[in-house]
Amino acid sequence: MTNQSAPSKPRRKDVEFTLYGWNTCLRFFEKRPQDLCRLFFSKQRSAKLGTIKKWCADHKLPYRELDAESLNKVASATHHEGVVMVVRPLEPSPVHPFIKGGLGKQGIAVALDRVGNTHNLGAILRTCAFFGAEGLVVSNEEGQARLTSSAARTAEGAMEVTPIFQSTNLASALRDFMSRNVFVLGADLDAKQSLYEVEVRFPCVVVLGNEQEGLSEGVKKRCNQVVRISGAEKVQSLNVSVAAGIVLSELSRRRDFKR
Image 1 (cartoon, rainbow, N blue to C red):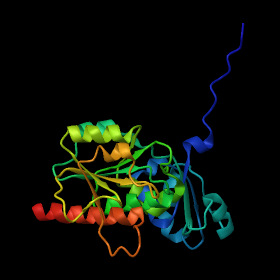
Image 2 (image 1 turned 90 degrees about the vertical axis):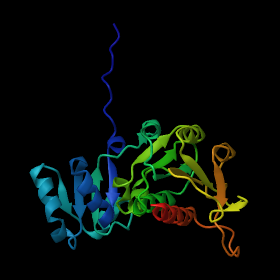
Image 3 (image 1 turned 135 degrees about the vertical axis):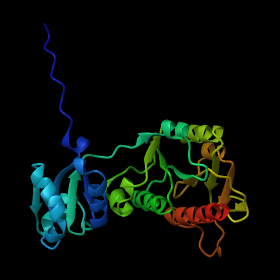
Image 4 (image 1 turned 30 degrees about the vertical axis):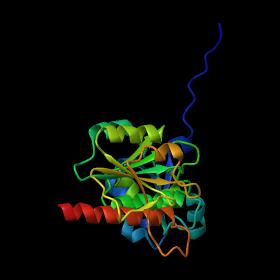
């Protein structure tokens, strides 16, 4: 008789996620305190973390004051602003229930086509939260940045505000959005028409492409309209997170005007 090995336990890095940065950690605790595992902080931040330290004590969770060098090691970064949390990760939801549920009548969502830089991902997520986007759709295709600790830090707490959805095939997901009368607007440097020249219907999904290659051909074909952001043309293009802010600002202006 052969012996069956016991199921292996999940590795710690698979079930825990490191958050750092003041706003990021405070927003996490506001939204998901039950997912906190451990807390580390600087002497300067200790007094302002009384509520969270009490939560840790009440729930028998480790918490400790550390010096700057130790905090750098725990965070694997220097931009932690004196607070680091080890938490249970927030997993993106599948996109199809989001599509099926439908955007609001004037809703806006954002989809990313292989945006590769984690800081850009975090900045776009923050912009989505600021303008009230109903969701951020990320592909799991090669080249797409993941929701890392640095992305969460750049998002400044927006990871806990804007729902994040994952798609195995972004072009297919956009097709499904269109089948539900959602307008798909692609932003691309080589588009012939300007954002300010075209009519946009709501609800709307804004699609942003890879930093070097722009939108993939398959995704472009799934857009109702592809536009560029007009500028002085002295610099070839904008950072993708800046482009996201401009497009969402313009769409929010139009939506509010219609209201």
